[in-house]
Length: 64
Image 1: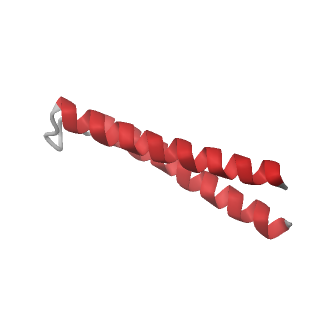
Image 2: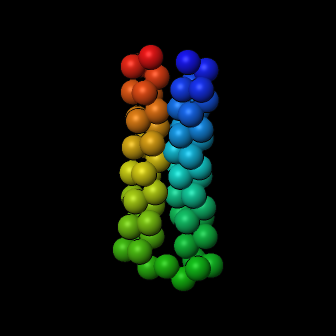
């Protein structure tokens, strides 16, 4: 039981990290010379991954 909670917490932490990476891409887009399409693609992809990881960990905890 405790191991499942730990695994869900680690998955949620990766999800939050994906949101932080999306914010970093948005902040550094000029430094990295990303155009609007590339920035939007990276941010959307990272937010999608983060949301999926958070939703998956929440659903895993609900199953407990």
